[in-house]
Amino acid sequence: MILYSIFGTVKNPFANIGGYGNDPGGATDFGLIVFLNNILRLFIVVAGIYAFIQILLAGMLFISAGGDAKQISSAWNKIWQAGLGLVIVASSFVLAAIFGWIIFGDPSAILSPKLYGPGIN
Amino acid sequence: MNISSILFLIFFFPIAATSVLAAPFVDPLHPTSAPPPPSQQQAVSVGNIVGLPGLGTVINDIIKNGNSVAPASNALASVLSTIIGVLTIVAGIWFFFQILIAGFNWISSSGDKNKVQEVQHKITNSVIGLAVVVIAYALTSLFGKILGIPNILDIGAAIQLLGPK
Image 1 (cartoon, rainbow over the protein chains, first blue to last red):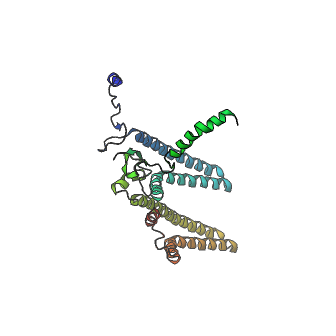
Image 2 (image 1 turned 30 degrees about the vertical axis):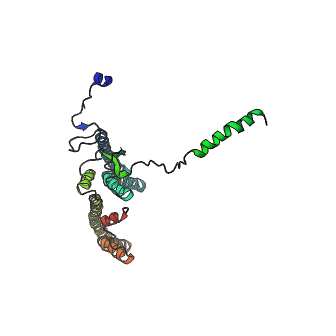
Image 3 (image 1 turned 120 degrees about the vertical axis):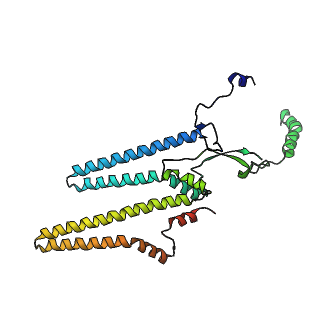
């Protein structure tokens, strides 16, 4: 192959990220899934910061409510919804496993995705 | 009938008819060369979706335990148990403050009958509420027994039953 002799093999520039598939040894992971995991972690952290800001705003509402029942109830709502959202964010991976079990009969169906190629035998 | 249609009938129609009739019957819904069944397909695992440590790494436990749903259902049960425990503690603290506030009101009522009655209602309601909180678990399991759901509080077993097969 002329093209191959021109370009040669492309070396993986990343040390800990594999090219495709995951290593049977488990040393390297599929590059895309590592990227996806990092994005998910970023989302979780952003959700935590957002919930913290919501609770802070609720505290400020309490301070400025001055006995106004409407504002107090809206501040409580803010706190409750921030807490509920945090619980859902934190347990989303567990929920993904349970939905994988309920829908596909395999708890790793969503959390450990597989690519299917043509037959090998 | 003009000459071209006659020519068509004589020459082309038999050819077209025989080619159509001689063609092997192909069922578009059931092709003869079926794709290989899923068991023979090459499945490439692309890695696990993992979040932050704690609840996010449940997939590792699932794979370690031979693809069973137990780690996930246990984690969900522990999350719900923690929430219920926190709510119980909050209820206890809230009860304490209600009683405290009622005591202050009783002190400052200075013999006003309406105020004293209000305070007594407040105390009664607080005690009833705390009793309901304490008894809620037993009450739920009792309702489960009555309604014929023996493990109404065992969410792990419920999730095991929910799966296919």
